[in-house]
Image (cartoon, rainbow, N blue to C red; front, side, top):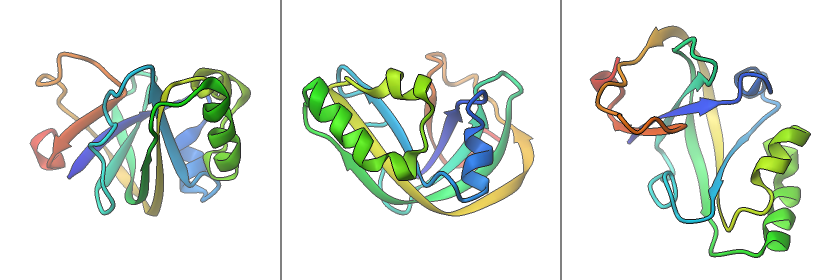
Length: 140
C-alpha cells in the first residue's frame, strides 16, 4: 500500500529524514483518524512538504507501526518523550502532538530521495496531511 504523507516544511522534516536524523513519523488526534489502523509494515510512504510546492521528494518503507489505545495527556506525553530520539520533533511539534488521545508512531527505513514529481489530488477532496493512494502511479 502506498501513502502520500505531508511533512512540516518549516521543521525541515524531509531533510531530517534524508539525512538519517529522523527515523519516525507521528500522527495523532482526539479520535481514531487516518492513518490510524491503515498503515502496515512494508507499506511505502511518499513524502511531500506541506508548503504548497506540491512535489514528492522522498520515499521510505514502513518498518514498524504502533497504534496507541486511548491515552491520557500524561500517557501521550510519556510515549512521545520515549520516542523523541527517533521523532526529532521541534518544540512547536511537541506542543501539537502531546495530549492527543490516539497516536500513531511509524518507524521508517530504506529512505530514498526521488526525482521530484507532482501528484494529482483531485480524488482527495478532504485535504488532509495523509493520503492513502494504494498505488502511487494512480496519482503521479
